[in-house]
Image (cartoon, rainbow, N blue to C red; front, side, top):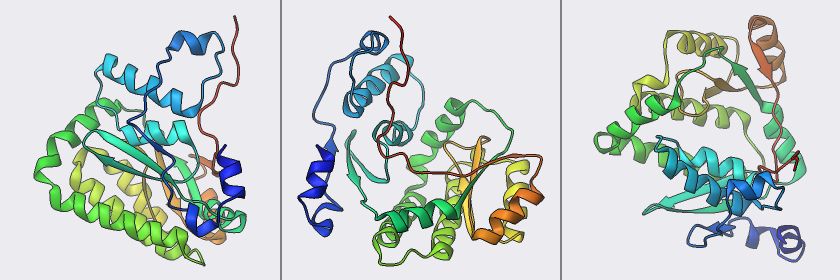
Length: 241
């Protein structure tokens, strides 16, 4: 369906067209998944919502939505609802973005529920910080939709976002993460930020091809991964009856 819409719609008309709004509901259960039911990304997101309510954990919805839908999206939240707006990129720009990103695993495993809980408690006191983060997101959208993707500007925006994230939630970082990040910057990274709630997990670093070579040498004891965009989101790859 989406591919058919792209084929019959001009690029500029479609690039900011909402793909999904949460006012629609699908009622499927995990039992449907286990039985191999053909569940779409939209239906999967409803399952995530329902089970998040059951678990009563402080989980960032954007991560779940991004995983369910795939691709590069703007996710707008308002009054406990969201809409997913896909950014359609040509293959050349997509490859440029992919090649600029390196993921470095910090080796730290943490309870994201506790970190997210601390962030939630800070929200009412940090509206100015959130507004700055929103403004950076809008600049990022313009960058992705511009004729030529600027890696340095992308890194700069990620760096600014990272500084604000630490201001919003001091538990999102620690001495090890700060040391790795600062060393990466000194090694030529344009910028970056921690992925997810923070406190551990992966650092996303932005740089050119020379930096990617340098980071493999300097951080050889860490797991370093390239990235590629997943256009179709979460899907069942194996099931048994």
